[in-house]
Length: 189
Image (cartoon, rainbow, N blue to C red):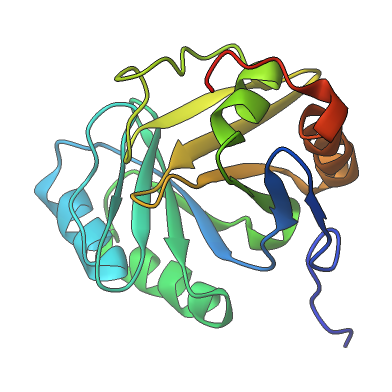
């Protein structure tokens, strides 16, 4: 069996902001009834956190849960333990309408950090990033130029992006172009 590798093998680029392939991460698409006590308990057992509010991501002791739609979460867990978490979700949600799928190897993950990170994201995603509009813990599904993706902002001011692995190279090149030192716009300076 081959070794698992990230979409771009840890590639990075430093310009107006630093763009980095953040490597492998355990990701589970979990669908179900957010109001169900059984569903809420399963999310808590998997991640150590509650079901997040709309357009939010919350972090717990063993992972994170991100709101994807009114009946879908993206669970972030340890890559090496993702299959065990999916199996446990199946046990915890037995008899309840749900879907839990390991999507780890179908995704690429990037971070954008630095003083101009906000400007880099704003150039390619139609999301209001003005002061007070997008805060730590906010989560959005959106388009990055021609591809679908999702992103959130952490407490340290770093943006984290998830997209399909098949467009990982495109996403990296798009973010690199937006972070090129000669592309400064200065809106968020």
